[in-house]
Length: 131
Image (cartoon, rainbow, N blue to C red):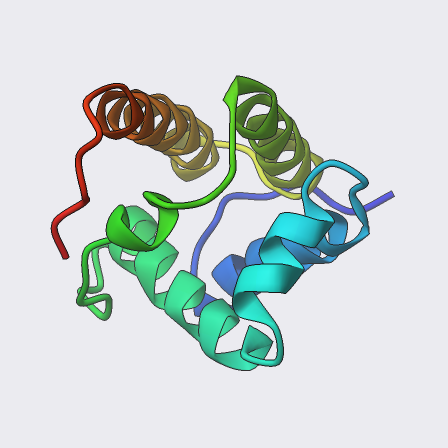
């Protein structure tokens, strides 16, 4: 069993992100969606995710971008977001505890809810997402 500690640095962020996306890539519901979009650009995607979570959890502003637009056209429904949250929460909880771990889980839930709401709005109104 892993020792559970507070999220303290970029190495901790990398551990969470790497383990989480390792699970995603093996998941029957999510793997095809991610593999089809990311293809051979996994190192770039992981690096972007390190920077995103480093900014959110450590307050080190390394991420520049808008996270929603790449997700706007994905063929996803509520069950995909539920599975994403399940894997994210499981990964964080199995490795870390404390305020930053709780924030990581809360932020993941918040993003999933927001992304699903925006995707549904765009679909229901035949809108094209802004980049």
